[in-house]
Length: 202
Image (cartoon, rainbow, N blue to C red; front, side, top):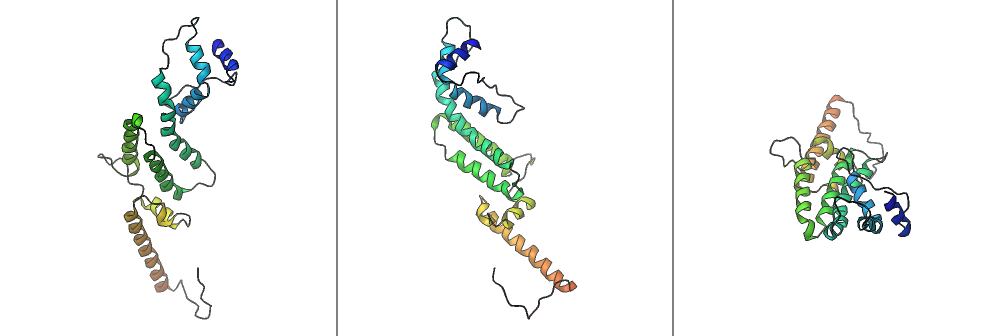
């Protein structure tokens, strides 16, 4: 570690900035680990080449080439997590967060990581699009709670959905629910229209 710190000073690699290890139970730790590797690349490579220390495994040129690409794959998940942690985030944001992750993953065009990317998309569809053979998960766009919250949010409405057919289906369901509530209120006399009040356009 002392050798690494020395090389950090030589290459402006933020002396005292330690490396980060990925942990399965710590969210975004692998992303943070890889970003730190890129930040400290020169210092790490010089440390690996030092003949006075014994290193069991060295990152290969191919590893260094892949690291930035894997960071690109992980970044949409990290960004969505940070967005979800904001105090103003609500359930109507869920579908849009997922839509954004799909969009950003599909926009990555790099054959060296296509296998990883495609598997990530498959797993996302299992969790959020209801494509799970064991039915452990449901399609978030047909989840009544998420779908109605999204369509009622003036920021999103039907544009927040990935599947426009499902958006129209949810819109029809909401219209039906609203109509039933309105008719029931009229029947019970709990809702009255004042004919003398000027009409307003919203």
